[in-house]
Length: 160
Image 1 (spheres, one colour):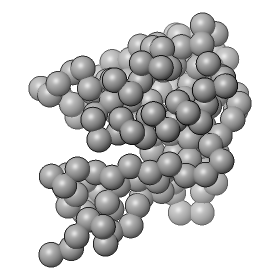
Image 2 (image 1 turned 180 degrees about the vertical axis):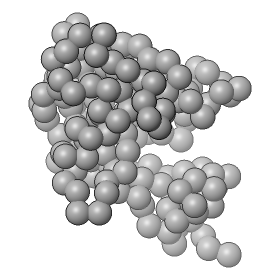
Image 3 (image 1 turned 90 degrees about the vertical axis):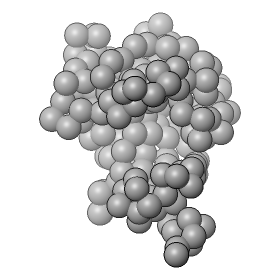
Image 4 (image 1 turned 60 degrees about the vertical axis):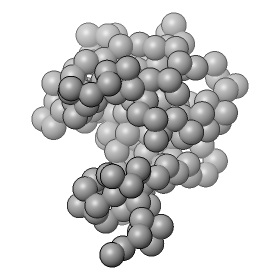
């Protein structure tokens, strides 16, 4: 039996998309239907493809998950932030190949209107979306990502 600590982290990115009111885009995860809806929200994120630059990945993932093309890079984390999956998910998520994710996070300014946002994408991630206070995020995500979101707040506090 493989221990989760023996598995690598999946490399990915996360995106903090900010509107002119300084609120961030959050989506209610599609795979959280029937679960505690209070902790089913997250900011866009996704895996880095082979040979892909993390910033390039962030723009690709933003468009794939939200339809947003009109965004401007503002800042990124200096290093990588990681979270571990709970034991009951290791072996099920990502075909059991990873213990969690290590992510580079990007802050982007949304330059378009709300009408540009489209979560009904080719491979949908979210069933609904809203603009939310940046500081509310740790209380909206699944509990195993809470510490990650607290690190994200620390990393980007100066912008909010």
